[in-house]
Image (tube, rainbow, N blue to C red; front, side, top):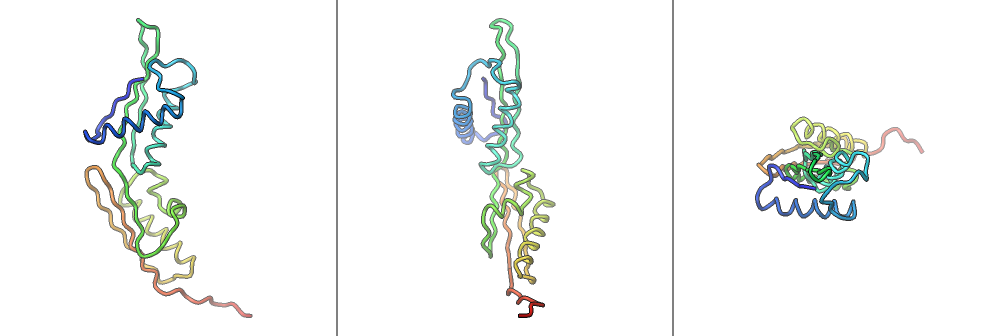
Length: 171
């Protein structure tokens, strides 16, 4: 298997390559030099596994392509994996505590594995709905998106206000 890393910074390439080797070695037992027909479509499986791993590590728009090729001299199939890990995404919610699991459910950045202004605005609306369901009807959520070359930082500023008393409950 040949690994190729596109659009990585030079200092980042060694880390990504090491992580990829560790991941594939853990997943398949070892890094095969030649690809046997052990799996039905190994190129898709490797690409899916690596894309999922990069998204769990906090990168957005990770692009992983596996390109099989046939070597007629050795009668073997070789698999070339092209990895573009994408920018690192940092998401913070300030002003209120939200569990990471709840944050992943509410913010569409995690489901879409991408970052743009529309997704950030939708995440702010989801946070407003979440806090209104918790009796904070005067909640205000402001968002800030900061894009750099290799990092994207999204900060949600939450002002919950005072919780409203329950209305319409008679004892």
